[in-house]
Length: 320
Image (cartoon, rainbow, N blue to C red; front, side, top):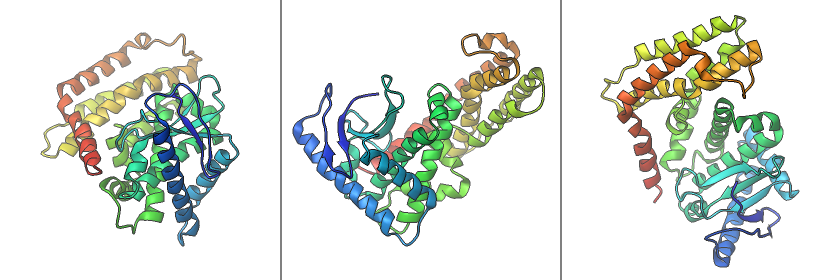
């Protein structure tokens, strides 16, 4: 994880760490003043609202306490993206995996005056990741090498972000396209957001992940997963006039391929005790053949994935 300027917010104490590039004292001072103002305003929005969302309040207060107790640091990182995507992050250090760090870039402070709901939502999303880390640390650490669990944590943070916007900011006249989309997608259990931002079909991922828990033999479970891939491939269609529909089709295929290694490992680990070091996808040739065929279908229609970047660019440009 990158080092940054460390800011203990709420208490307004300010500390520095070494090895930071592209940061000068003026930038740090401006960031400190503006970011703490944003956090004070966010605190006021949550504490004074007539409507409350219990999970938002609980997780927000939990993380705020961690920061004030100096158990969690907040960093100004000028190398983060100047965009809606990648402008903030939560991470853990290799030297001390028990300690987390929240990092924010210039984008949030620069856009706050015009788009306060966006800045608040990004902070809530990042706070949720910190809350997950401290409250479910073992699984969070596992998620660093497990794409399924990693996606679950990412979608949890995105869901809380949407819940915050829906309860505390829905009536704001300064909502951007992204905030409006997240609020609307709550009706769909955030499935659209997962497809768009995580490039994952959540419904399919849950079905894939649940296979291991079925009370069947290893060979039966592997066969079921293999047949699932064949079925997805056979029904895939890219003939719609809607770019979104075609994009959803390719994301379903991509979901199968991307998470297949983890699904197969989870099955054979649970049923036969296969370890990460001994696991080889080549040992399951029938499954591997289907995965390769699904991947070939993706490659044949790769242009459908352009919708992802096109939409993110459109959203990002709307905040310029």
